[in-house]
Image (tube, rainbow, N blue to C red):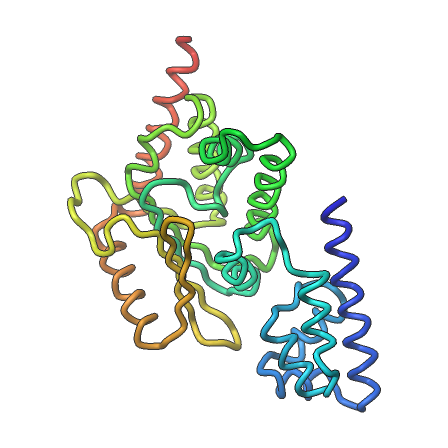
Length: 277
């Protein structure tokens, strides 16, 4: 039901955008140029294929002189409360990226999580939350993961610290399923995954989640996350430093082939625990 409401909001936004754009005699390409996106993106907003972003809605208001209509519509109807406020913008950009590079020091990145793993992780941080809350958070995580099933999915590269493989989230069955899922995505050539082994020792930005995103018609960004906080970085010099850090971690990680073998071996270890209980 929540997904239906969100889609209806996108459709309303798109219908109004098309109507008001045509009223001033502007093409999709012309409006896109004025608000710093492609004409194709304007078309996708109008057809409700993509969720509009707040900053784009604000620029549309400025160009079409709509008195803040699209910003108000976004705030009332489209903002997705399923995500923490500090992560909302990163979640939006994730859907627009052509390339995503994740570094995960402790847990499986959201785009790779299985339902059981996401549920166990959510429960661990919300011991007193009702089932409805838990399931909403899990569904939000799984909706994000749909990105990797799309024919136009971004290039996705993840580096997992070996901690991710060794520290159980949920029981052995959950971990076995989760690691097999990652291995399957790798064998299907939908993702590239490397493991940073314990033997690599210290590494840059130790203990920090890092996501790098690239786009067709926007500069690259970096996202880092701490305790109930996140930082979306777009300063070119800072993003370059983050990319340099990622390259250093990637150089210290196992090759994709060796990483796949380690992931499958860890999955088998968890599977053995399941069979002996």
